[in-house]
Length: 153
Image 1 (cartoon, helix red, strand yellow):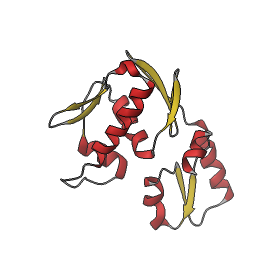
Image 2 (cartoon, one colour):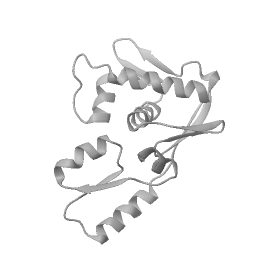
Image 3 (cartoon, helix red, strand yellow):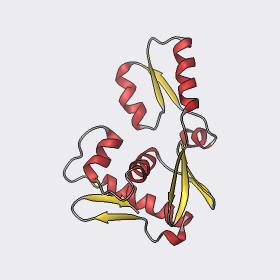
């Protein structure tokens, strides 16, 4: 349901006790209302989400926008999982600069990675495939920087 809502341009807001907050954000929610909340608080949070800008990026191999969990290009679009969206946003925002695996992991899950975790690499692999489908001329635009992390060029 999350992907369908984001694809239609809707935002996902969860509510409940404070102990659910982390799990909701990790699941891709855009905002969280801790109980108790008021209709006025919900209204202001919705206004804030409605004003959120679409992120646009241009590279020599093509341009794209990130709208929620949707990656939009002139050639088409595809849905990203929440983790792929955060990774792509971090890499594109730091264009040409390597972003460490630890920073990517922390940016997604809000805690340090275990030494043996390969979860970032799995999401990078999936992102590469999606970008290559949309930009065949990109030739693997996400590059590994040995001993450091990844960069997008």
